[in-house]
Structures are given as C-alpha cells and as structure tokens.
Amino acid sequence: MSFELDALRERIAESCRRYRVRRLDVFGSSVRADFDHRRSDVDFLVEFSDASPEGAADRYFGLRDNLQAVVGHPVDLVVRGAVRNPYFLQAIAREQRNVFAARMWYWRRVSGSIARSSGFATC
Image (tube, rainbow, N blue to C red; front, side, top):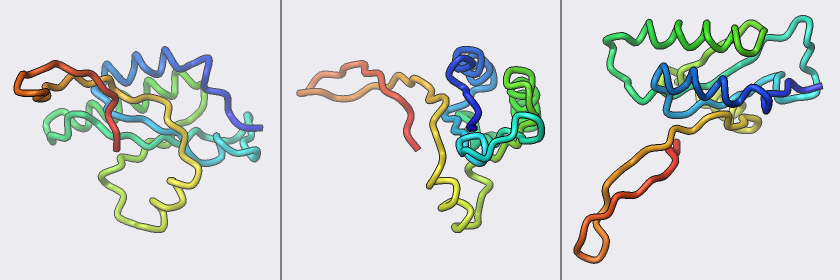
C-alpha cells in the first residue's frame, strides 16, 4: 500500500514555503505498493529556490525535520542538485510524484509592453 500524502499537502506546502522550496517530489517505496507503514521512510527530492551556501544547512535540516513531523515517518531528503549518478536520477524519474511546486511571479514582454505573469516552477 503506498503512502497517502493528499491529506497532508497543505501542511507540506507551508513547510516548503517556510524553507524556500522551489519543488518537492516524493519517490521510492512511498509511491509504490511495497510501502510498509511500520518500517518505511518517506523519500523526498527537493530543489530549493535559494541555492546559496549561507543558511543551506538550516534550510535542509529545518525542512527535513518539519516533513518528518508532518508525515509521521522518518524522511530521506535528497537535494536534486547534489545527485550526480545518472542511474539514480533515472530511477527517481520513473516513479517521482510532485508534492509541491512554488508559484513564481515573473515579468515578460508582450507585444511591446511588459506584463506580469504567474506560473509554476518547473525543473
């Protein structure tokens, strides 16, 4: 039985906004039928909006601890930019499910004028 995150999405989104997450995906046993509610952890793939080294540890561990409190299971938090193994990235891509995507405002030029647009961050 896979782990059900839908009821927790708003609390997860609050944590993501607090720690400036651009995108958060879940992968691993939590999206598959082999999830064991007694023993499994929940694997998340994160991309932070702020990639600066200053405060990176606070953002990482703060988010991880918050997610553990929300989901009630141990959390493995993998930073997308830190993964170098292409086979691991392919394995994640086959089963990842988006949990949060930051709403971003940006300016774009439309027919000679400038318009404000909104969109979701994509990776």
